[in-house]
Structure formats: C-alpha cells, structure tokens
Length: 228
Image 1 (cartoon, rainbow, N blue to C red):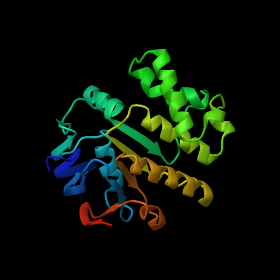
Image 2 (cartoon, rainbow, N blue to C red):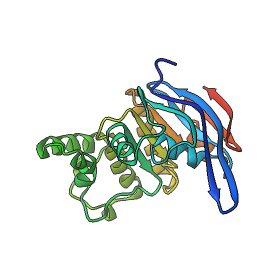
Image 3 (cartoon, rainbow, N blue to C red):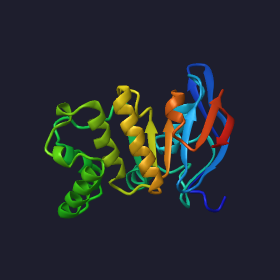
Image 4 (tube, one colour):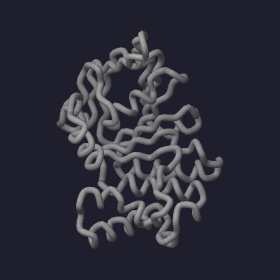
C-alpha cells in the first residue's frame, strides 16, 4: 500500500538453537497507515517479541522485506539500523529503561544528545514534552523519586522527543497499578488522536481494547487482523 509507513512482505525469522531451527515468524505480511493504533496479541511463544524486535530495527528478518517509511531496512547494517532507530522510532518499555542518575529532563533529552542537537534546542524540546505528559513540576527529580506511572510518562516523553514515525510500546502498563495504567492508556489515546502511530504489544484484553486495530499472532503467523 502506497500510503503505508510500515510494510511487511512475507517476513520470516528463524533462529538456530543448537541443532534445532526455530521458526519464530513464518511469513508475515501487513501494512500500517499513518495514525493507526494497533495492539499485537497472542499466546506465549507466538512471535510477538520477535515481531516487535523487527519493527523496532533491533533485529533483521531472515527473509522478506520491511519498509519503514520509504526505506527498505530489511538488511541494513547495525550502524544504519541504529541511525534509523534514533531518528524514526520511539520506544516505551514495561520497565521504563530510564537512567537513574539523570533527572527527568535529562532522560527526555538523551536521544537528542546522541543526535548532536544544539543544547538550547534540546532543552526547549524536552521542557515542552515534560509539560505535555504532565511532569513540568518534576523535571529536576530523578526516576527513583517518581511513581511508576510518572516514570512511564517520562519514557513516553523520551519516545516522542525525535517526533518518530512510529511509537512501539512493549507491555507499557505491565508494571503499573490499575489507576496508573489507565492514566498511561488515556495518554496513548490522546497521542493517537493527535495523529501519532502506535503499536502496542500486550497480553491484556482491556489494554488492547484501546487500540483501533488488533493483530493476533499464533505459531509465527497472523491469525487475525481486525479493525474496530
């Protein structure tokens, strides 16, 4: 599809584990349009993590084609994939992955630092995003001084800092209590209404219901792909 910002064409991923070849993905094809909000679900071992790693340019397919924007990233070098991750993707993890020694503001700024952006520009962008996720009063705090929900808000702000094509979220409410989880999902809903493209791996049906499209995997294949 010409308007897709993500396109998988017959993507396969196999792993050699001793004498055993594991087929994690066995020919997966789908497209993602700008502004999509997708949940990826399925039983343990179905290929969810492998799919997320490929989408996030953390790994390469064994065969098949992956277009991100207009670029074929299927067989890029490690350095090229690293550049793509930094410029075009945002990540939100279950465990937040914040640097404990840095402040909220510094954690948000980190991707811009690695891109060599001017300090004043980076600081202004990080301040705006801290305000956007409701943490303008906490910018000097360290992650260990924040609640789990607040830490996840920092992670979301950091994911937004490079204005990514796609935000990838891996069980983003998995470590949160129900109230904090609902707050994070409301923030995701708002980001999607503002036009952000979200892909969220979850095992929780109530979380997946926030997405407007559900892809379910089983045994390395797409079992269903349903728009709501």
